Image: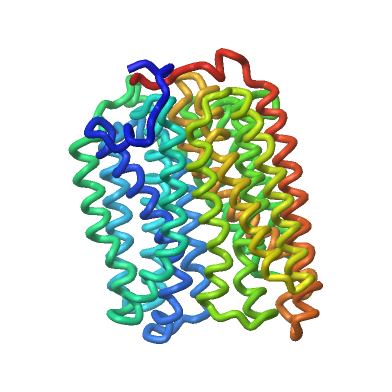
Length: 474
């Protein structure tokens, strides 16, 4: 089947692709659900286990190890083959889930969360890398649209499901519900995912120093979000040195984690990865603080505040599905360009709504921001993957979700530094909160403008053979 034939939504659910579609969606769902799990279930866990001072580390360690795992996913896939790498990482995730779900102390929960993150980081990165391998390029935007829907469902259903399990059964059930899901995932992987191993796999070594630098850099970023502004600045500088150093070392290694042009502004892949990183940094601050701010300013309950935050996810999903049938290369380029502009505009609208006490304006801003992500994200990722050479496609594809996670971590830390410097932690009135939240949204809008520059640069570098290439057999 030629890639020049228009893809249809129903095709990804036909017998030929249905199992693969389900595998990829389930891999994303595991990450999406667990991203919302800690904040819902762990407050109850600390009532039983103690260790309230450690609760924030449950998400931090999950994220740090997920980024480390994702960074090494392409090498693991090349060394073991996609099937064995997914089964191994799913097993690691399962072990982490069992450790956390049966924990008798908070340190044990943290160990479980770290192991969970390591396994899930590899799972999500390999699932992303398998999209161009198992689907023809005409269907890739539809797969991205479906994954956006999974995230939207997780944004709505994840907290609700975790809350119900915690309230009706126990906090342990919210962790252990992952067990049947990962077993189903592993069973489908064994049936459907190719087991082939890349040539030359025996020559691949373990990139421990580079993975250590990446993990240490992200850990410093996470620490920056919870300390005073001055030491936070030093931590961020240290993190930048470590992360830049890891990219520099990787470019000179015989067994690279990243494509050779990663984060080089002179290539489609490099400038595209900058756009991916920056756009996620831009959106992270609002994701972290919006629920807290509307609860403090407007006395919203958790449900109402969560629904307001989830507007972004729904808009993201709806817009992603809406544009999944776009065939015009020029229209795709336009979508890539306008996405960051919409995100920046949406963040400013949310800020205006908060400052003016206008809920409708906040909702509008959330819709514009989410739509910006949905219009932009799928074709940005597709363009980056198509621009990569055959030899570098695994590394490039697997690096995309890892870069997104890194952007979220860095963005949350930068927003934390900005909010703390503006006095949000010590704000005692709604007017104080209004003043303190301004730099968070201004920072997000500025970074979105930087992402716009990177996206514009990337699109300008796309050659006709990049845009029209087909990198998967129909």
